[in-house]
Image (tube, rainbow, N blue to C red; front, side, top):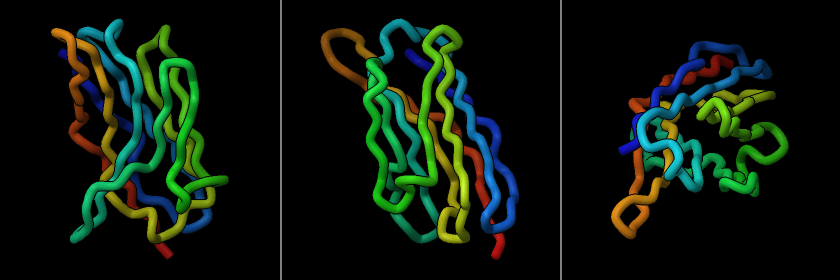
Length: 119
């Protein structure tokens, strides 16, 4: 299995920046794609950004040009640099990893980190 621990959330004013980190442990050699999701109160969890093992990236339209996802495979760490934050970015942010085991890919989730953007 793969364990994920997020850090870096907090309270920031609109227009500010935060950097989220996600440290992976366990079967990290089996990790393929990784990503960040978020869930605001009363809303479904949504994809924010994804990155493949080959560093191909994909972003939600709402964060394009403001957020940057990256990964350091040597450190088994995923990052999300968030700039020009808006109140609508307020949510719990979750790290996700797709890892290979027993012939299939499985999802692993972190516990989440709260991001609050004040207006």
